[in-house]
Length: 524
View 1 (cartoon, rainbow, N blue to C red):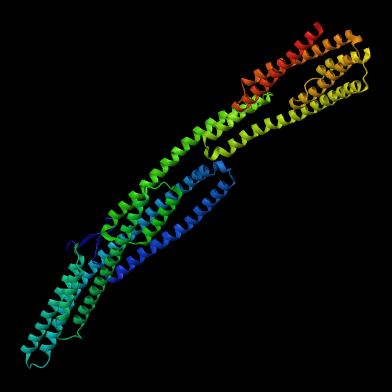
View 2 (spheres, one colour; view 1 turned 135 degrees about the vertical axis):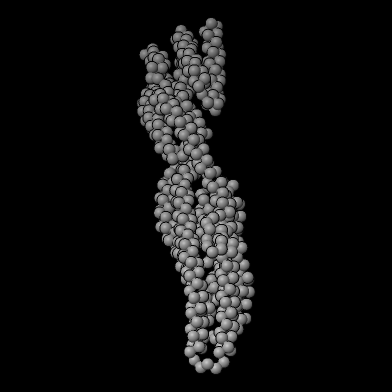
């Protein structure tokens, strides 16, 4: 038999001598393979959809700061699983198609052998028929034997010529550079031959073989046309794949490639161009998935670094939050919070890390609030005590009680005021100004009550001087306290503290001027 092989899409050699029944069987097998692959793909797509939906639900529940990174991590796992499934499914589909083509090749080979045996049988049958006709002629009437013999020989020669044309048509079907028009021309030549006895068995067999060849030729024409359409579709898909392979929209592009893969399978067999087309399409897909894997690998490494940095921030926050120096601790926690935001999200661990960090901060501010409430209660008691001193001093002044006992008590009040302690910056200054003005008014009224009591006035003035000195000393202590806080204060707080220091220094200068004036008055 002649070498009758052509190259198919998967690089296999396929004998193109199959009868229509073999071609239909093989084509049915090929048709069933995509259906089976499609069913498997549908089930797998459902599972992938469930995985992605679960991942999206988890991502939605996470904090806003971690949403984007978390989604990328979950998407990476889902898309990698989907990609693996697609690759396995594509491999299964290729194996199925290859198996179908192999089956078609084997059936075609068997058919070729069958046809060859049929040709031999036809020739033997034709020879037997010719002998039978010749014998019948000899056994019949002896009239015109030469004419019958000539007719039989002419009919046999015509059948041989037709058999030769059918054989040529078969050979044309089997050629690697098969041309359907060649087969059509040969069959047209067959049809142009006359038939001396169309009802004979040999003639009917030739016609049957002719129809089989014509049917195979049409089937091959259709296959070629389908393959041409498939090639056009796959070239368009390759163009789309090349346009997507540099994309950085990882999730969206992975979905697009999945859709392209579905379209590729639906495009069908592309014939001899199939392997080359698949290599181009697969190369574009692989380029994208390689970049996608590297992106997520880099993202994992980045998230690990950020996780380590945030764990250090949490440890530093715990150390700062343990302090009861509320101002310094607060400023340190604010610095760490700014540093936290600068680090960026740490992927799937972000929510856990953020919860730990927030727990440290909330615990600190809760303790600070409780301490401030407790301190405020103490200040409230002190304010009430100082307001009581103010009322008592006001009563002495209102009653113009300048007795030695009253004067002694007024002097003691200054010491009592100091012993009560600080009652809050704003309230302390307001109450002191009120108390100080009453004391001054009292001593001035006492002095005005009579020059005869000069010594009493001097004593009162000296008491006023002493109170001013005590006040100045407290202001100096306050200044030292403020200066110790300014070193660790923020820029905004530092400016405020410097203002307080300036106010206290101004009050000290005013007190010193008053003292100098009073001392001069005593000296005069």
